[in-house]
Amino acid sequence: MADPLLRVENLVRRFGGIVATDHVSLDVAQGELHAIIGPNGAGKTTLISQLTGHLTPDSGSIYLGGRDISHLAAYRRSALGLARSFQITSLLLDFTVADNVALAAQAHAGHSFSFWRNARKESGLRMAAQAALERVGLAHRAGVLVSRLSHGEQRELELAVALATKPQLLLLDEPMAGLGVTESARMVKLLQELRKEVTIVLVEHDMNAVFALADRISVLVYGRVIASDVPSAIRQNEDVKRAYLGDQHVVTAHG
Amino acid sequence: MKDKLNARNLVSALLVAGLLLLPLYSQASGNVFVLTLFTRIVILALAAASLNLIMGYGGMMSFGHAAYLGIGGYAVGILAQEGFGSGFLQFPVALAASAIYALVIGALSLRTRGVYFIMITLAFAQMAYYVASGLARYGGDDGLTVYKRSDFGGLINLSNRTQFYYLCLACLLGVVFLIWRIVNSRFGMVVQGLRSNEQRMQAIGFPAKRYKLMCFVISGTLCGLAGALLANNTDFVSPAVMYWTRSGDLMVMVILGGMGVLFGPVVGAVAYLLLEELLSQVTEYWALIMGPLLLLVVLFARGGIMGLLGRLNRG
Ligand SMILES: Nc1ncnc2c1ncn2[C@@H]1O[C@H](COP(=O)(O)OP(=O)(O)OP(=O)(O)O)[C@@H](O)[C@H]1O
Ligand SMILES: [Mg+2]
Image (cartoon, rainbow over all chains, first blue to last red; front, top):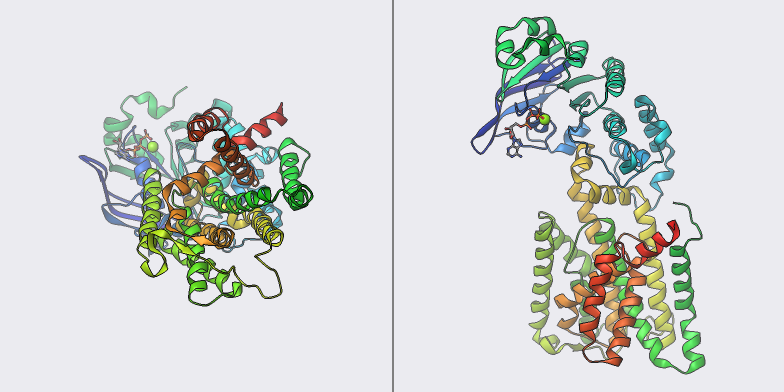
């Protein structure tokens, strides 16, 4: 079997007395959509942040395409094709929508030690931005300041920014957080499209979305992976039912 | 943003026109003092503009920017004393020394952020102040007289008041133009992005520190130019130009004029130094009036004078 695109081995991260990531091992194959679920505080965001380099693990290793990236800075990992969206929207609020995405494209189009030419007139960057915005359905908002966007639009922009870096692995931390029903449905549809092009790790509380999208699901509880399998097996898994899904209605969908 | 006829641009344009015409007024009215005063204002506006690059656009609150005034000044003064009177040597050395200082200080300071960054840049500037005070050969505490202004051959005569004023003004306008190009370039976009959200910028693939350091060095180098001009203007350089209150003055000019606005620091420098001049003629306790006045601006006119003008336009 080919190497997995992402391999996590025995990752540990503590915050004081809390073990937020407790010997997590995980494989994500090329092309799959791998969902990570778990109750609040299970350590999902902490795990994602270690994958992207925003947090340093206390021990353990992370491999991307067979290469050890455990000690690379966040920007180097981005250059290798790792992109993330943030659970709590993290954008350049005082920039326009187009500028946010164009900067992401700029980061991957040569260096930026260019001091004279007007960056907003670089057609390559603008076109890349436009393309990413069209993907997520935000093209008509290109000239608007991000602080003026609705929450749902900001979630879509998070995704467009990640896409503009041309990632091979997309780490999405609750892209549906705070979205309404129609917005969520749009996002699910969008992810259906994206999964054909890029490997995705999806952290999500919305079980409808997770079971509709995922090839595999890993369940995180108190920092530990208690199960990692295909959706149908996760649905049947006794440990998962007991430890996390608990009330049956959560598994069978809510709403 | 498109160039538009708004209050901000109007004020900037009038200000530039006024500065360009000032020597004519000075000549016609026989008022030499106004030219001397505005030469100083233009030089400090240049220093404030350089500070605006890191403070306004880059979000780096440096509290040690006056150090470059001293470094640029001492480069001129020391070389002059040692018999190297050529401006073609003095000015490049002033810029290079400032750049090197900025590179070292920046590399160390940029490991910290927030209040710590403010404190460490302040501490380094105070160190530079004490080093200068210890330069016994070059006047120590008392400072160093520059007996002959930088010599640019037949090109320009710095001892001629009008020519020197125009040199300073050309430097100011040149630097403002340069900053305008920079902030709209790829580099400038990155620097402003880092001010806005560093975590996001790193996530999309920018090595933050490298860009911040570069910005810090450009800013310091430009301020070194102001230092070289200032030493020529006063025919004197002393540790006092590096004192922390001078750094504070520069910050106030930037905040008063409007952080992150191209002409903000120029407007701020003119307003601050004119006010200081006027108030000090009225009363020796001018600082007691100036302080609260500035506090009001900071509290109630967010974005400084340029911010007020911007709001004027939006109605
Ligand atoms: N910077 C931090 N300092 C201290 N403790 C932290 C920090 N970040 C996370 N934690 C703790 O680590 C644990 C895991 O947090 P994390 O945010 O990764 O959970 P999560 O699974 O993403 O939760 P949610 O579903 O609410 O987003 C929690 O107990 C949290 O309080
Ligand atoms: Mg989380």
